[in-house]
Image (tube, rainbow, N blue to C red; front, side):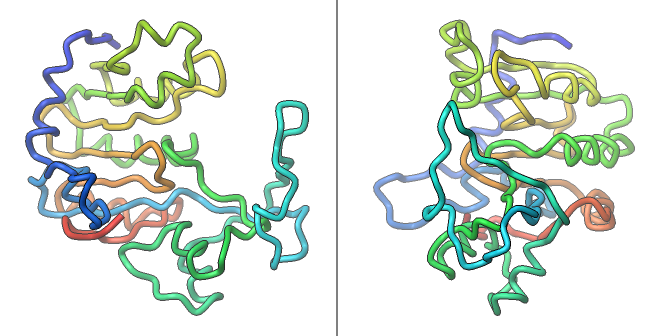
Length: 240
């Protein structure tokens, strides 16, 4: 894997996304975050688990004792659930915009009995599943991996060396070796990663608990066929 100091290879994404106007009241859409070139888009919802320690489903995270350095939040991972199951449970529409924010808005907070998916990165098992799915669609292509500054600044003591984030070029499998790289919890999955021929692209925003994917019909069918992933079809106008 080769670290790139020149980030020009990232320019195509900036050129093919619609700039976000922060003075606008409109929320960001897929077209603001993903290259506007693909025929199909989906989002992969990061896994949610039930916490075996919590029996009262009416308690919110905001009502729990906040974690500290001496006493981190104690999770006891139980059965995995899905956003589709939760939407049915709480009589919520299972739309293209669904995420943990949908639950919080409808319920008045984030239920403490749910261990929500991580923001800004997929979990390691999901990453391995993605690599296995993308391999047949990548073949001999190399890949680019972009870790934005907001991921790097909290992960390395000497973050001044990474003012533009981290940018790598290598084999698809190399993304797995980067997951735990860092001085704290690890970089996790990239902010953006794509095949050299740009036939597919993934993006996980720093505060999102889902990952966006752009690609062809066959790739989407493979993603939706996976029993490990919860995928929702989106389009360029889908709100975040």
